[in-house]
Length: 418
Image (cartoon, rainbow, N blue to C red; front, top):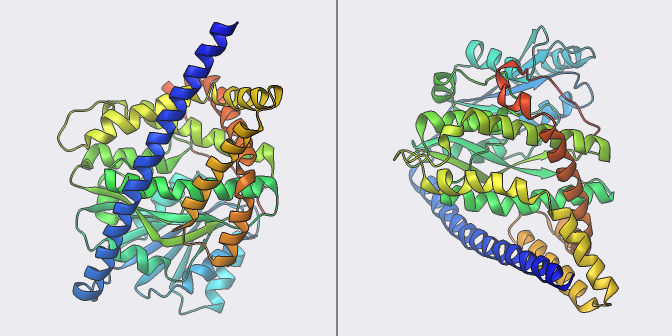
């Protein structure tokens, strides 16, 4: 029994060291990102003030009567003027179309157009707008239940004066939901922020997230837009674009100064449903673009093909043991009354959260709230670990459809929110 416990302890120690090394590299390269952003802003202000590309914001919507007007108000109140908006109502059964038409009537100068189509799914709705109603330089895809910060579009557009940029992800933040589940999701998004900054620098970013994702129209149209046989159209599209253009010279990046807000999922059951869709969709995308793994073509970053993509799969395998590792550590600490170990675990998580908050673009009130909540994040994060674990097991039960992805359809899946 002693030998087994010793091996388990060694295994946990090795995983911890790998995790620490990963955190070190992430925070080092986020500093590099911050330095690049400062240079970008200086160069933009001094040399490219006249760079004002046209942009269309596509808002696919299905049964979004509760949020569509709020989303449109946030888009139209943005400081960037050279923009158009296309709302694609994908056969909604509620008042989404009526409310959008009323908004257009009440705001005749807003340059908003609404298109109604037979229900076909989110990807079909976006493609309809992309190929039939977009004639601008850039296109931004925005969820109908999200909110843009007033300078989000302007900050996003300035990145594209670099001709090598193909696509940019937006900095998505969670609105406040005063519950354990809400706080856990906010911590998760804040921690992810740092990772995306590092991935931008290292050229390992392979997910241009759906909310506020922005592309050059010519590049997006050249690959045929979005595929309709995947549950997570954003991951699939990013790998599709990388597969064609490569990411060694071309840039798939992260605009941390372009901020959008989204609502957290409000129930545990709905959160599992959401994360299952994300995880299942990622596996489908990996299956479709498996040729990227360990690809030696010079147009691809080797850090992406030899490290990031394979490690993403390894992380999924490790997810099978992660919940048990946490329970084991808590059991050992309580059984042997090793309160010092519990204190170290809580302190470690708190330090990570506080580091993430240092440049997370949260306001002071939010930072104080999250900083005070940080010591509890060790237990809050376990909620998400259980969710991810459940989603992973559910994905394994559908392995056959992952490999036979051509028979899949991208349908709408709403979850409970605020």
